Image (cartoon, rainbow, N blue to C red):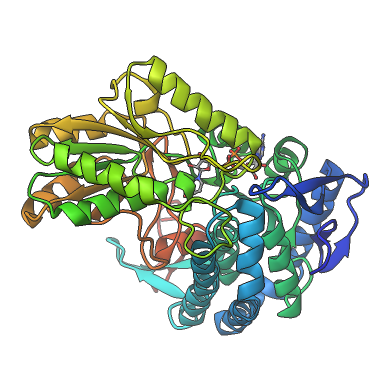
Length: 493
Ligand code: NAD
């Protein structure tokens, strides 16, 4: 694509009704990559009506799963055909290192393939009979697509987060309006182009760029929307839940986290250093499931901290397109302010900065930041409690397993958690005791399209990915028949 200033509505590229646009900024040098169209409530209304029409009267929900699967497979192929371009675009728009962007795009294609397969398989199991405790009746449960979906996504994994909603929704037979984050809109528009090339009927996928208030809010509020699927921050999620409550809309929320990583004394030191770093520094720490609170058992603590600082000094910071770069710039000026502000607040709260947290030497433009390692972080501080969403790790030491689990669970969030120990029984026990939706044992972060994803507590409601993510987009209907030869005989004897 050579321009990104239009909206994709009802199978066509249209100018935003008010003619507004905003810039997509490259966080490595603050240059403008493209102008992006800003949707108004009027554009959102057109997109939702197109999705409604496609759902109510179009072929999409009535196709066989096998046929829908074919479209999703073509979308996956279209993504792979543009892989290099999409990965480079993600780096320019978001700042992440290229190998991580390639990973995202491959996973995006994989997500469409995965849900293609579920759609194809659903033809074989369209309904389930339900055993009843009363004779004379038979009952079955059938699944039906939930309807028009409003999807709103964040900026940290732009195309991947879009696929986690678009792929299962359309596989299920829903139609969708996606509003990507205004911070990183470009690959979502490429996805619209790919859907168009794949020949999707008009109105099945609509992609509208714009601001949260002006485009996101009217989308979530729209009365013709049946379901809101949101990924983003807790405050926005909470607002959307209130909006959904007005019309009793189905809603799923994937929100923030402050996930713990518990490292026991018996761990392999080098493995612990690597997973600790990956858990908080990959994708610049702009990861909902980042293990940003680390608990280290007392005997391993001094050596682990020393190795962590040593390796963190070596982390190559720079433009994500450069070979060997592991830490790109933060996504934008606002995020830079937020993260550096949290670092200053952490110092004021009495935490000790063991390494980093400053602008690295030699960078006068772009939102570059050294990784920051805080130790002895007070449990009541924001640094320990609040999501920072940057390469900032808060570390404490512990003595007993009980103490570690209790510290880990003392959080309003419950997205993920991780535990490292050679004692696998202990790992399993800790995994069961952590209050979070995703637990890693002897690793941190690997994410698989087949496995459920989502949080406890303020980290969200519902699950994405796997069969659980597919379920999100269905209603379940019971169909019960009276099959006895005898009259019912209640009112008429
Ligand atoms: P955000 O809440 O600021 O924005 C997310 C989306 O909501 C954007 O598209 C934005 O335009 C839109 N939005 C903002 N205000 C809105 C409103 N009033 N009505 C409707 N839409 C509105 O979040 P962000 O800063 O883009 O993303 C970072 C957050 O996302 C972090 O908290 C992170 O943990 C979370 N996240 C969670 C997961 C997960 O799977 N749980 C994955 C990625 C990111």
